[in-house]
Amino acid sequence: MTQSAIHSRVVGTGSYLPARRVTNQQLADELATRGIETSDEWIVARTGIKARHFAAPEQTTSDMAVEAAKRALEMAGLEAGQVDLIIVATSTPDFVFPSTACLVQNKLGITNGCAAFDVQAVCSGFAYAMATADNFIRSGAYKNVLVIGAETFSRILDFNDRTTCVLFGDGAGAVVLQASGEPGILSSALHADGSYANILCVPGNVDAGAVRGEAFLYMDGQAVFKLAVKVLEKVAQEALDKAGLEQSAIDWLIPHQANLRIMSSTARKLGLSEDKMVVTVDQHGNTSAASIPLALDVAVRDGRVKPGQNVMIEGVGGGFTWGAVLFRM
Image 1 (cartoon, rainbow, N blue to C red):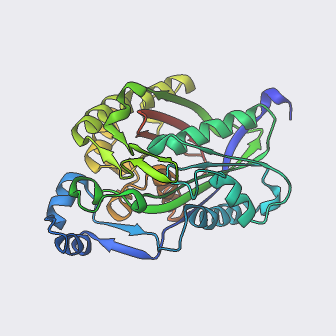
Image 2 (cartoon, rainbow, N blue to C red):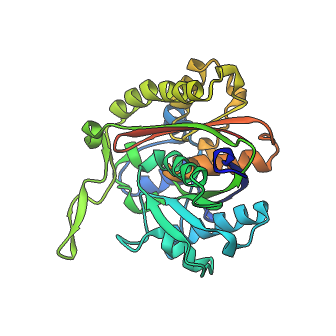
């Protein structure tokens, strides 16, 4: 295989959801004890979310990432020691440092000294991580790359704010990308605009052993909605143009699972029927960087996404960041 012929292919997927499943009604009952009013009908109408999973107090982001990684490696038929690069997309790492990727490496028992690092692009993080891994593989530097999206957003939610606390959940998803002579990832497009940093953020930091500012997620919902609808169709089209393909070439659209209305709007703008869109937001909520690989694994394992089909993933996140990756299974 010459360097010019190197491509990266998805050869395994995996996911993990914590055991605690919280329905809208259960969450509404819990919020009512705080004097916060909401309902299943209100949440579903605005977001499409019906339930989400929350990590147990002792569970960390790296714990969930490891479980998803094990399942992806099993599908790929690889031993953990064959991985030569680990990239974890997360906004909720176990620690400020070391990276969650290094913790995952250790928990998987990988002792080969493989590179490991985190990517922080919030809900676009998995698209960023996939594009990064693809470029490393194409360069010839690595052959088996573990790409993970994992989040414990429940730890940064203000449960006195019904506009945000009903939206998010915890979980992890993973893929194994492997060097191949056959095209897999066909194109990618990544963007950011830091002038929108204030519309979706956690405006706090660690200073002198304490949190300075706010350690809870803040979101200007209307501003995020408008920007997301604006950029998602454009970045997907950019990825298609780079690959030299038409919209009709997309077999499956797997958008970041944030809001069903945003997802449906993007599908319409791409000329796709909604039955070509993988939807898990109703059961998972918004799991940030974990949402796309979670949805991909669900669709692979239930038989919808098949070998040879073209999959478009795309996401938007705090930063503000957005990106898309088009690949052939």
